[in-house]
Length: 74
Image (cartoon, rainbow, N blue to C red):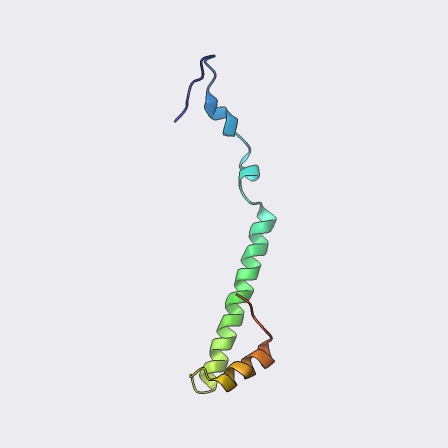
């Protein structure tokens, strides 16, 4: 909805920045997609590891995961 100021100028033009300036940027989007993809791959690998070792997450299995896959912070 456009608002008209007393001078007759359409106030909606104030937010008429280019679409690229409004979005977070193509490189940031690509980077975020790559990070998300790697996170999903790591989670699948850990899930596979757990299933190969009985399917139950025990203290010993947590230590093994930490040792084999490094520490993951979420």
